[in-house]
Image 1 (spheres, rainbow, N blue to C red):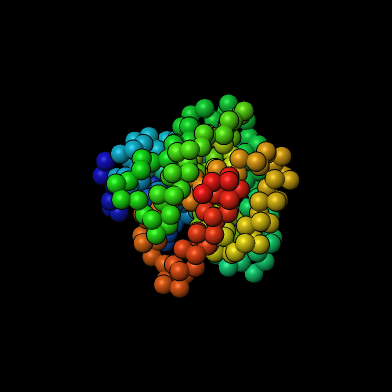
Image 2 (image 1 turned 90 degrees about the vertical axis):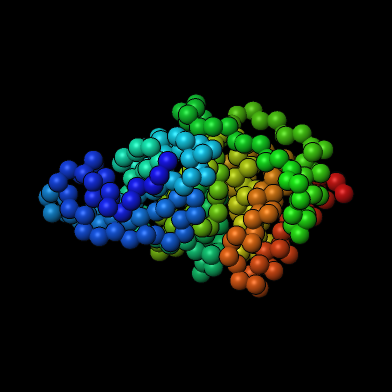
Length: 291
């Protein structure tokens, strides 16, 4: 599917705000899987409103043609449940319109402890939602097939060998997963978690899949203590059995493999990420008593 062109934005907005005037538009930074545009409009009553248009890219649409509608339905349910997410307003093929949310991602927060506690509290709250109300979500995908040339600079072969020897831990009840829970998808305002965005990877599955991903990202950017504080807080708040966590840590550790060069990291930060990734993998393998 082709993307909506800028000239179509004024027409698009008429579908939800008839007779509104499009004042200006601007591309938002950080969009990787989708083109994200903020629209400032003047409604008929003269009030100013800012909305966001998400136009999904070819990769997402090829693997999941109905991704926009899934995210619309998910955000509507999460918003109704009182979670800090953008309110959705309109969906059509490959396009979603949602509220603009104030805030910015924080990769080096002034109060890291408070931030990781809020992250853990949000995730515990999300995972406590009744999964039956989210039956439209797909089940969590299995790991991608082993590539012909594994990224052994990130121990990909070793990780996949370990996962091949392990069975997926049994799951009593699936949870709603964000699917890409990390600092880049969290908007902070005044030290408070204001919104979690970018839900296109949402699924139903083991809550520790989200936890493992968050742990790795926290280790990358904030270090061991932040990762441990997050994990401990989540365990207390959620009551989730944490024994299978090393397995999900390994699953999370696969995500950067073959893709780290696409992250655009500065040389020193990439060195740090690689070093901490090795530490993360080694710890998981040790806990699983695997070579």
